[in-house]
Image (cartoon, rainbow, N blue to C red; front, side, top):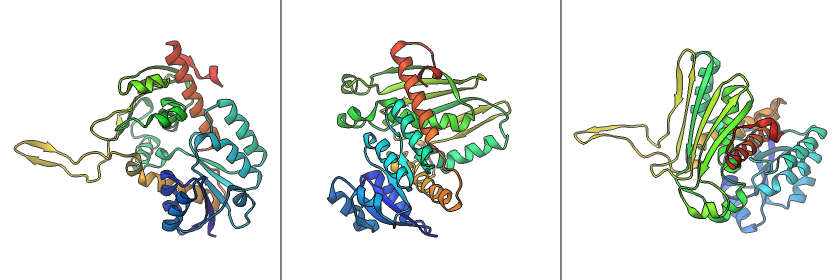
Length: 333
């Protein structure tokens, strides 16, 4: 059975998902909706389909699922709209910037028995999946501590910062999800410190660009996260998991995995410098997983609840920074 998709939002992540859908033999891109018709037409010229309005897509009988790649402030409304008309839904993170709004949205999803998957693409990165497999196989024993380093090559523009929800809901939220995914336990306590070291304008807008976070579970397992909006050497994405029997790590990725040795020393090619190139395989794999869950009628994961829990950790982190104290996640539930 070929699953028929509509894409909502023809921006850069929309192009990534359109490529993933049209490259999958079990899927077809039927329609594209975007507030800017020229953007939708550009995507259609490359990947096919036709321009339709969101309302037309909701009424359509020839569309099984939607991919929501629109601005964050539209996500919850669109999830509810398509849940009510029986379409399966894939939505980029976050569902919303408000915990209460996410909860009300997920109530609609549950009432309609809708399928909802949230786009935490790093769960599908082949390197991180290999790391998770080593953990699940017991090769490093019981997890004790995790270190996640996630640093962007540069800060986004001010216009994006204004609507992003801040570094914890926009950037760190991926790491919060990975922490839960790898630890296999819920986060109990958050303690964080954040500064403005990269761009003073970010501080003026009420956000931070440099942060360290320690997450602790009820059993005492810890995950430390280092985030920065500046990494002059490329897109820095590393994970190290320490266990009772050893350690497993996933290192930074490069376009070419070579090393050159000369009299001047050892050199390697530069790191990827953009999330869409670093995580290209992960984006394709997550769409393949969404298609598989629909074809096989299995639960979608990451779920809406995963999206909610990551957002709650982000809220607790922000509270920890503002009040300079350890915060229980139960305070923001």
